[in-house]
Image 1 (tube, rainbow, N blue to C red):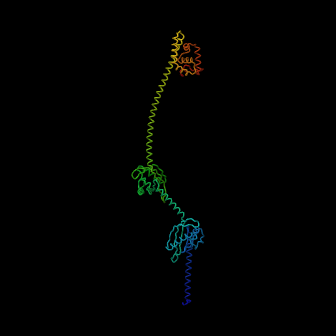
Image 2: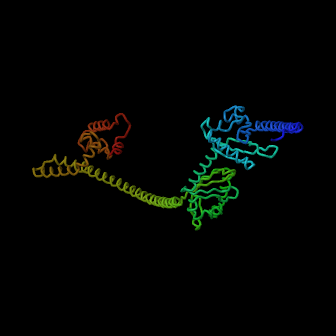
Image 3: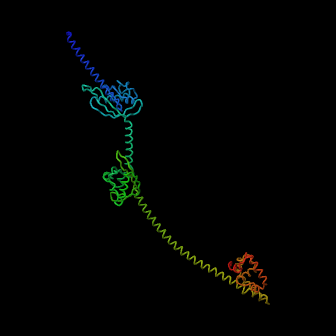
Length: 445
C-alpha cells in the first residue's frame, strides 16, 4: 500500500501545476495573438484564404472565401470543407492537407472541383503551407486559393485554336510560311510549301526570303516584305519563286502580320499558279498572233476595197458612157426617122402610086415604125401624157427647130404649133414661168 504524499509534496505538485497552467495560458494567449494576426493577414488577401487545424477544420476564413462559397465566415469555423464543397472534394482537400503537414513544405495545387451550390466546374490554383507552433511542430495549414476557371477556359480555347490552326497548317493544299519580320528567316513551314519548292522542312527552316526568289526580282520582294513588317497587307499575283532544282515557278501570295505568343510574325499563304501563268503567256501569244493576222487581213481588205472602188468608178464611167452612147443612138435613130424619112413618106403618099407601089410603101413604113417604136415608147414615157403630135413637136423643139420650121415640116399652121407649145408647157408645169422649153426638154430627156 503506497504511502500518502506529505503536505510538502502536495504543495510542490500544486506549484508545478500552477506553473504549467500559467505556461499554458501564455501559450494560449500567444496562439490567440497569432491567430488574430493570421486573421488580419488573410482578411487582407484578395483571394480566398483560410486556416485549418490538424483535422482539416477551419480555424479562420476570410471574407472572400465566405462570399465564394456563399456562407457566413463565422458559420465555417470548426467545420470541414464538406459543408461548402461536398464529400468528394472535402476528402481530396483533407488528403492534400495531410501531405502538406507530413512534408512540412509549401505546395501549389491546380485542381478542378464541382461547386455544389452552382453545380458548375470550378478550377482553383491553391497554395498550401504548414503552420508550426512554438515547439516547431505542425499544428495545421494555411491556404490561399484563386479561381482560375476563366483562365483555364481561355487556355483551352487557345489550345483548341492552336489545334485547329495546326490541323489547317499541316493539311492545307496551299503553302504556308511563318517568318521573322526582323531577320526575314523562316520559323515554321507546312508540308505543302516544302513539296512546292522541293525542300525538306529542316532545310526551309534554315533559310529565308532571299533564298527562294530569283535575283532579278529579289529587290522588289525584299522591299515588299519590309513594308509588310511595317503593317502593310500584301496581296500579290504571279510572284516568281526559285525551287531547289533552280526552276522558276509563279505563286499568288497573301501575307499578313500575326501575333505568336508575345512576338509579331509574318504569315504568308502561297498558291502555285505556274500553269495559269504559262497558259496566260500562250494565250497572249495567240492573241498577239491573231491581232497581227487581223491587222494584215484588214490591210489586204483595204487594198481590195480600194481596188474595187477604182474598178467600180471605172465601170460606172463606162456605164455612163454606154448609156450616153445608147441615148445618142436612140435619139439619132428616132430623129432621123422622124425628120429625114417620115416627111417623105407623107409626100410620097400624096403622089399617084399604083397598087404594088402602095403595098411596098406600106411594108417599108410598117417595118420602119417597128424599128423606131422602142425609141418612141421611151419618149412617150419621158414626156408623160403628151399626145403623139405633141411628142413630135417637143422632139423638134429639143433639136433646136423654131415654130415656123416645125409648121412647115409638119404641114401645119404656125398658130397650131404655138397651141401645141402652150399645151406642152402646161403639161410640164411651166405655165406662166420664164423657163426655156428647149432647155427643160434637154434636161429631162
